[in-house]
Length: 155
Length: 83
Image 1 (tube, rainbow over the protein chains, first blue to last red):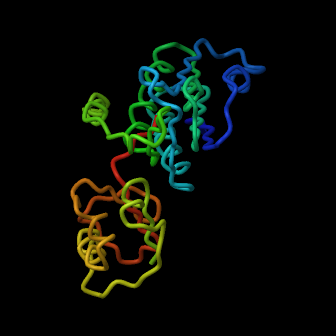
Image 2 (cartoon, rainbow over the protein chains, first blue to last red; image 1 turned 180 degrees about the vertical axis):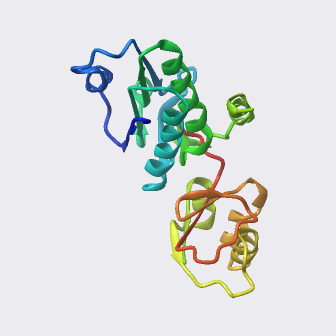
Image 3 (tube, chains in turn red, orange; image 1 turned 90 degrees about the vertical axis):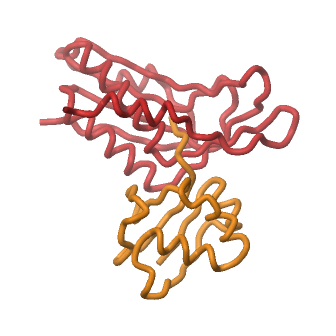
């Protein structure tokens, strides 16, 4: 039976070590843990912050849908996804995916799949705030993010 | 029905949400967009690039040809930039 993923959408930062520990504590069947952390870049020193707007309720629901699909598709022992919202300064964390499995390929693939779908399906929008003052507007979605999804099509 | 707006659609519409009852001739998401665009200049600006706008009905993604019958909440927003 597929595991039930842990999904959180929060303003606060997260602790990678603590979150990984929750998936691995008192277990002896896990051979692989893959973690992905997305951080805020300053885009060559230009940005003072990224503002992440989200759709409360749907953000959690959509990430949970994507995470359950990954848990159905790969044999995982645990899966945690945390996505932050609000104003995030360069160098700070934005998103965390942790996938645990008996063997490495399932964990690698599930983490990769999660990030590809989060990019284009999770209802978050980024606005760039400038060090010089004001903002640079909303970040445009990238075509290559949409194209990346096709590699997960099952034939 | 509650209409919600996010990111630049929200900024152009000049509101986060509103409650309204569209006429019965409004059947699909595309019909609803066309109807909302007639409300005032702000709404017209929000829906100017209608094809770029993504839609969720009751917090699930749908296409513009989806039927809105029974929807409690319809949200309009730009392509997402999560992760």
